[in-house]
Each structure stands twice: as structure tokens, then as C-alpha cells.
Image (cartoon, rainbow, N blue to C red; front, side, top):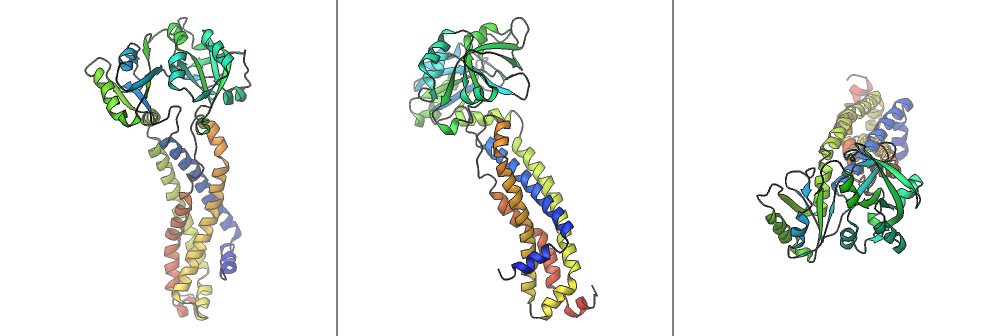
Length: 387
């Protein structure tokens, strides 16, 4: 710590250069924190479906291909399946495309039977939902976001499903709201709206009698693999072969339909840090070259080669870690904004912690060459400015 004032004075020797270097590193680590957090969130989805006792059955070849509704009875007959329900992707938004709403057509009886004890719905509102063909149950967070209330008629635009009249706009009557008991699922359900599958199937102009995927609850989670195999065997060699997997694996596959998000994010970070490596390395080399006589004086008064090496490395560490901490702090502060943007993806609060290690590694890489240059200085040549 006794060398900290010396290091601090050295870092701020050229204030303008230092400020711009700090800003560059901080922005790079702001991106690192944000992108790593998003990547971690997509790689470890909490999802809207969860639990070791949950399975998802999709088309074998793509989750975008539908399955016949008639498969329901056969899946129910599989030993070990305690409950089954069906869901389709609606792809809806409210007024503008940025106002995404996770609209889910469900069968009220089977859906709430499978997810019993997971949702909080007032009894009177559940009765109203069951008895209202155009009724919808909306997550409390979504109600608050758009200022909706029970009794409102809400038009939603589907990006996929046209009605019989050719319109992509569907109107729902809000008859109640729901919340989740497990608060770790609160974010995943924060943009959900539930409505009747019967209304959806009767109203759409194509795809009648099909569903997007089936969701099963098994009586014994340890038998999930065997039950999955039994379900898929039922439909082997049929026109609509299936793939049954744990709910978490399904969420991963669903996300990958958007593309290899991890690769894209890593490519962006790679380009940023490749540029940063040269920028910071050039700054450190300039700083050392400007102080050659001073470093020679330090050696003259008794600083060993290793101590001079350590001082330059410490300077690089101070510069990089200080700026990286600021950038990572900003990325942490941005978590609420990211959460609102992703709508339904649960974000960890510590996915950016590896950034500290990256900052140290960056400091060692960019500081090593200037430090070796300083260590190998010949005192006489340096004082005579012969380099």
C-alpha cells in the first residue's frame, strides 16, 4: 500500500489520456456485464414451465411444427403421466410490437390441474374466467404495466394467427388477474395473459385441431426418462412423431430457435476486447516510454528489476480494475432495464462477477510488455536517453 500514492500519481500523469482510457475500459466492461448477464439468463432459463416433475412434448423435428390435439388421450393413457395439458404459441403484442405479451391459449381445467398450487387466482375471478368465452386472466405485473383493470376489453395483435375474417387483432375481456406463489417465477410470468383454447381454435383461420406442444406432470420424477420414451414410442413412425423432454430442456430449445445467442454475444465481446487490448496496451507502452528516465532513477536509488516490473504491472492493474469496476457497476444498475426488455427471463445478479477476473487478465496482458521493457532498462543508457 505504501506505493499507492506513487501509482496514483503515475496513472494521472496524463489526465486526458487516462480519462479516455478509463472510459473505453468502463464501456467495454459495461457491455461485458450486460451481455454476460443476458447470456447467463438465456443459458439458465427459469422459464414459464418448471419443476422436475414437468415434461414437454413437441414435434420431433421442430418446436414450430404443430401436433394433433387428438394426441391428448393417448398421452393421458401413458403409465406415470398424472396430468396433461396443451399450449400453443400465440405471438402477441399490445398496440406496438415493443409491448410484447406472452399470450397463452389454455384449457382451463387441465392447465390449472397440472399447475395446481402454483398460481394465486381469486375464486370469483376463476369462476368468471371459466364461464366467459372471451375471458382472460392477466398477470398482476402486466396489469400494472399497462394500467389494465378487471372489466377492460383489451385488443391484442398476433404475429401469426389470423381470425376467420382475416384480422390479426384479437379482443379479450379481462375477468381477473393472477400471481405466482414461487417468487423465483414472478419475472418469468410477468408478461403472461391466459385465454381459452376453445376460443382460439374456433376463431383461427388455419391450424384447427392442432396444438403447439403438450405439457405433462409425472407422478414420479425419477421415472421421467422412461415416461418420455413411452410417450415418444406411441407416435413413432406416425406423420407427427414427437420429442418429449424435461421442461428446462424445452425452454433451452425454444430459446435456440432465435439463433445461437451465446455465440453472437461472445463474438461481440471478442471484438470489443480485441480492440481494447491494443488501445490499453498502447496507452501503457506510451506511459512507460515517457518515464524511462524516471524509472532509471528508481533503479539508481535501489529499486530492483523485479520491483520495477511489479510497479508497472500494478499500474496496469489499477487502471484496468478501477475502470472495469465502474463498468460492471453500471451493468448491475442496468439490470432492471434489461429485465423489462427481456420480459419473462429471470436475470441473475452475479453473472458479471467473472468480469473482475477478465479485468485482471487484461491488465496482466497489456502490462507485461511495458513492464518487461522497464525491468530490462540499462541505467546509464536510460539516463542518457539512449534507447
